[in-house]
Length: 326
Image (cartoon, rainbow, N blue to C red; front, top):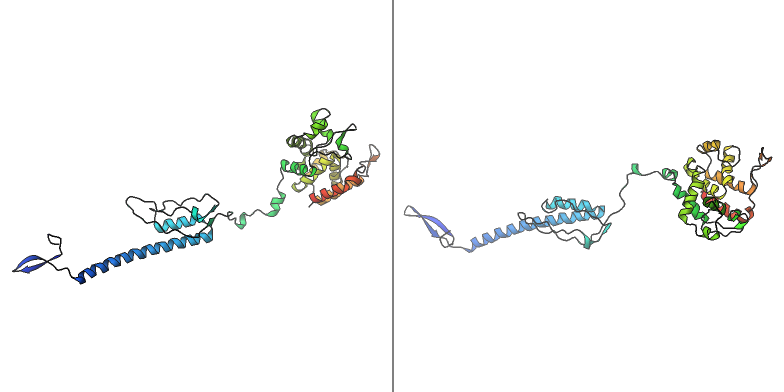
């Protein structure tokens, strides 16, 4: 370059090198402009390739429903200076407007450009994939041990709230009508309180208090958890409704003396009971309708007589235990 900034060249004149100005011609200008255009074209092609890769990554992620994968792909494409760590998607469903910003993280020494926004993309988070080996077999779910709370809730649902059934002997104490609430009869509430309850006390019996009574009086006392898991619910319903009749149905099925008393022999046999819910349903309803005709040697009387209210309640009992046996 010359002293004034114009283009110059060196020539030899008289044996000495001499710098003289060089005329800037049109071909020279065109050559420089072409080179600039080539450089700009190369930059545009590189940016277009990046944008295409970004769109492809987002499209793949949309089909896979995996928001973390797209962020990892973008990080690989744009480099660690843009996405140092994949962002975490916290919401179950993300609309296009709520997608994480694709603006690059600017660093002083590494200028970058923001990738083009992705249109019409929705990322949703579905139930995690469970491999076949991790699936819980259906029979294991059915055979899982039910909790005491769940079993008592099942009884409460069937019994309902306060009962004013005049035909139910469990609603009376010494001929005085008290009623039943959550399946807790008047005699059982009297035993719990240590005195005769009033009608208002029965009506106001809370479900929590009834659950406390049911847990100790029926679930624990009759060793419900010693039965096979699939029998616990239907047997709890039975002893809740008629204590000795429920035990007697078990004893008849196991070939034991049907005295209705849960002694050590009956308790031990309960743990190995192999009868079905259908078997128990049939035997319990038979006990209610006909009683157990086998004679008690101590009294020379049948171990039990038919329920005096079978004609009134028999249909409802049959429906209830048929449903429980399913």
